[in-house]
Length: 229
Image 1 (cartoon, rainbow, N blue to C red):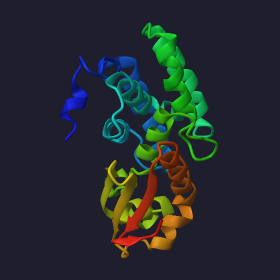
Image 2 (image 1 turned 30 degrees about the vertical axis):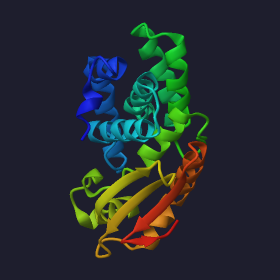
Image 3 (image 1 turned 90 degrees about the horizontal axis):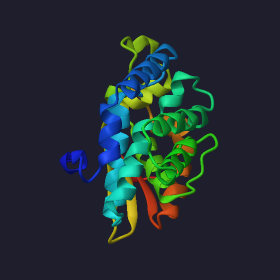
């Protein structure tokens, strides 16, 4: 599905970042912190999925390859601030990304939109101030899936574990024709009820709504085939 986004000629910066040893260390180490704090997976599976979903969103809207390359790069880097602290990780991550990209001699004109998107991706204080930021928000907040759970013992599941573990299917669909972006989830009520999903995800879904509006789209949420937003 995502083979075209691995093209090093079309998306050179994203592919440079994926191969960078320093970044591999930071991404792996920040997820160790997330696991120690009993958070869901934030490692390569997550940042990879967010990068490709970000590219899907922008490509579906006719965005040029260079902007898509910057957006995927922002998505790949968006959670590295977790290695500093979970609190305000979007801001610390943006600062880290600035130094990494400067070290790689990336032009300021490309660094600026990347760190802007990283600094605005979290529902705590993020705002979809650009197309790149909006796409990263939608891709990040829509990543809900069973294999994000890092706790092996179900008896120790917290609400985040239960909600993610309950999601048996997840898809983000963009319809440029109907100007909608839809998150479709299938939830197994054996592990979590829909009410728990909204208890922890409502701020994220509201941020997704704002991000979709920035892209001139309407955000829709379906759970078990029922439209809830």
